[in-house]
Length: 197
Image (cartoon, rainbow, N blue to C red; front, top):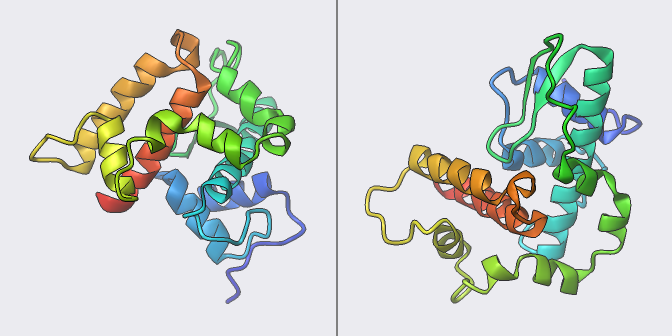
């Protein structure tokens, strides 16, 4: 059986296909890996260790997710939950105001000029508060420091997820935080998800 995705499909349709096969949802990193392993063709076929590649891959995926969320909402088929920890299809419910509020993250990811106009220097600036904490190229340590968890002994994924949710609630643009800071938090969670299972 050929597991490759249909190359003529839009990335949003490919994502929908993978999410329909994963009722418990997928973390961002797992979704990216599945898209790459099934030869999506829409994401850069390059290692995620390069910051600009990581940014572009993340941006393209989240652009597709927000487009898909809007479409599924209009079709009244699903609600799409979007978070680096869990991207999941939920049953559509009438009367939900989930999409009626202004969503600065949605606006950011649907603006393709953000992708086209962002170069390596911009990515560096976007993630400065995060990457400057890197010492000796240790991404795990940098992510733990961003989450202020580097001194905790008994660290596991539930504790990291709890801290992630706390930080998102504090730094979300809707609550006065910045998109850049939230992206750093999302990236840190994506990195820590590779180390803690």
